[in-house]
Amino acid sequence: MKVDYIIRNGRVMDPLTGVDEGRAVAGCGSRIVDLGGEIAEPRWAEIDAAGCIVTPGLIDFHTHLYH
Image (cartoon, rainbow, N blue to C red; front, side, top):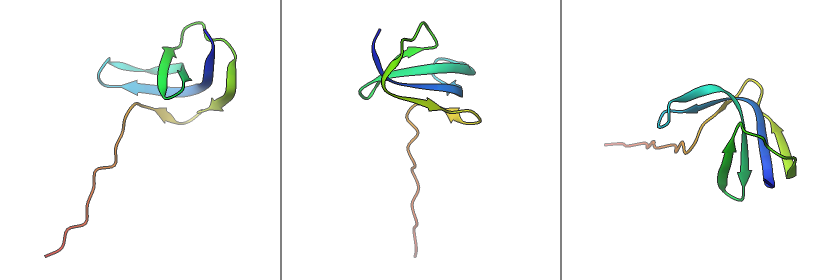
C-alpha cells in the first residue's frame, strides 16, 4: 500500500477502539489508512513521534467567560 506519511515510535491511544500501545500509523491525505501493519515507504514524510502520544481527533474546547 502506498502512503503519504508514516508516524513511527509514538504511543497510539484511541479510546474508541481500546488501542493503547506503540504502533506505526500510516496516512494518505487526511485519512489514517493503516495501524502498524506492513507499511511501505512513505511518499512525503516519516515522522518520529518518540516520547509523544498519537491520538485521533482531539479538539480544544475551551472558552473565557466573564460577567
